[in-house]
Length: 475
Image (cartoon, rainbow, N blue to C red):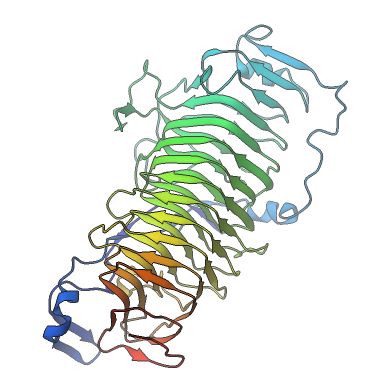
């Protein structure tokens, strides 16, 4: 298994096609079909947003999977095994000139207190310590070198360049400080949101696995690739009450990212990120009570359970005000039955998104989507993946219960395959409510389609959608 560095890749979905004439390119030729005049109002909407592929669909880096399997889902051990009398408090700059000097002098369990001020360092944490600042607005750490990942910051591997904090120990705690990847004394030439980005990564795990990384009340900003990254395949990480801003270097950039690990991401605020919060090949991650704004993608899980573990949970998250081509809460090719529950998505291009499957079923319950009449936006999009997306296709099966979709152009889009081998799309819907949508339900595709419980005032079944069983659409 290899780590993917890719956060997004532009492709063009085929579910909704602009104009009133459609050319169906099949194995036996090209057919021209014109929509009846009664449907032309629907067909003349802008095309669906350009889809950004999920983080992790292109393998670019070796993963430490072989070493991490045994540590995947074990109970968290004590953080140091030492009593308070054994712990040494170390002070920067009082006792040590730099944070790295204090780490080098530490034993497992020691606490490094970093006073208010600015520190210019690229730090390696290779012992189980606590690094505790004076506060997010008081203790600032900047990179000592400028390298967002030259010569191509968007290429893998992720673990290279200027990294502000590298974690290569169990039971590390980082708290109450700010990591700012823009050192104004350095120049990279990569300017994003007014900041010249010097750091490739903010907090990142080295090859491990490393367990029980705790990051809380930390601000990470002005980073090119990864803000906070659990990448070693360990277990027990906990990222909470952090603020991540301007991790928007390129299509691979992710604010908070989890790779083949298990843990909790909760009560974080992420803004101005290409991809705000996501996991790839997670073995059991809970995404809870996070707030995402002004980001290309909100909260999603990809390939959950590909290496075992338990299903991911995306719950009580808020995603709002995305830029063009933005996505809210979504589940990509689950191996386990991942759940998205009680999330709120406002003013993005695609609210809830279920794409492909690997044996698992994505369940979406009690979510609220409000498109705020954004041009071309979709409330719910379920697809097996278009042929144009290459290998990112597969039968998709999803459940939607007690969700609400309002003020979108397309309330619920269900799409199957358009060419052989005809991947299928299956949805089961219950207690689905709609209001203020131009088209409540849109169903299209040549592949097998199975759905039940969909309802709305305006329904369009696209020709030549091949319907199988379970139909219960109410006009």
